[in-house]
Length: 180
Image (cartoon, rainbow, N blue to C red; front, side, top):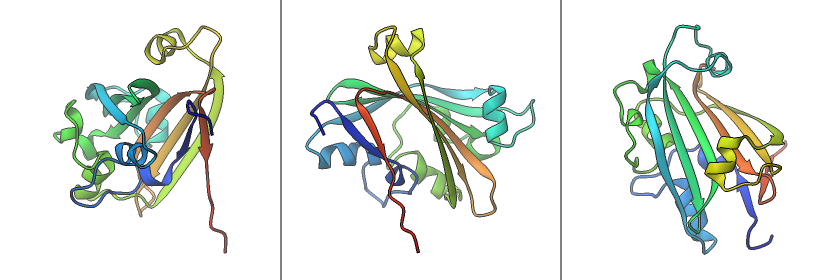
């Protein structure tokens, strides 16, 4: 792995953190001797795009809490993530604001009674959009990887949907499966 490449594993990002623990990204970057940070660019209630409403099993007129975050590695932007939560889950919580959440979003959700049981991720690749080029400092012909993650509770109900965009030239997604 080169100095500019980052290997991303999903499992730490869907598990609640222990009390007093950093968010998963900051902890993972620090363990690699790097500096990881993030900034919430926007947060609040909104009407979701149809594809997000579908992923969350919402009716077309239901609203969501949306959070847009920029993820940084050693001060450089490396990921743009939009997270969506049904209002019944996140309305009136710290998820509606832009302040950092101790332990991360998954820890807050666990405190609210929403723990992951099933996580589905779909990955696609495409060229970056003009907005992604500006935010992620990409050129007009730079490819990106897109990760769509739906998190369901034990009853099978989706309570979180994330859509992340990574520069394809500096990211590698890694999945390890224990079989049998």
